[in-house]
Length: 124
Image: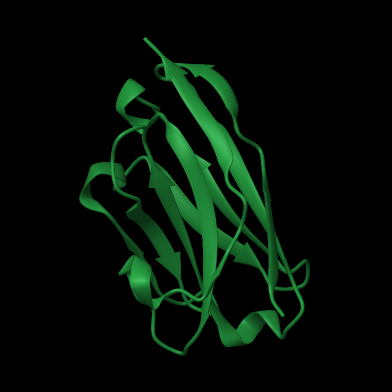
């Protein structure tokens, strides 16, 4: 059974930065595509970024391109989301998720395992 534990959320002013971490356990990390998603109050959970098992491919939702970077350290079984130039609209609970796949994928329904989420609040 895969387990995912996120950390790194918090309160930051607009224009600031945060780095989220997600530790993966229970299976072979490199066999899994990892994704970051977010859910704001009253809204559906949405895709943010995804990365292939070898780190060679990434994809981002348009609203975060150029500001967020997804990366992974396969020696530490950890995926990161570095967030720069944060905006109030980035306020949400951020979740990491995983799916056993060799191809990166964006749809929420494709992911099998989810973390508990970490709150990111950006003040104006």
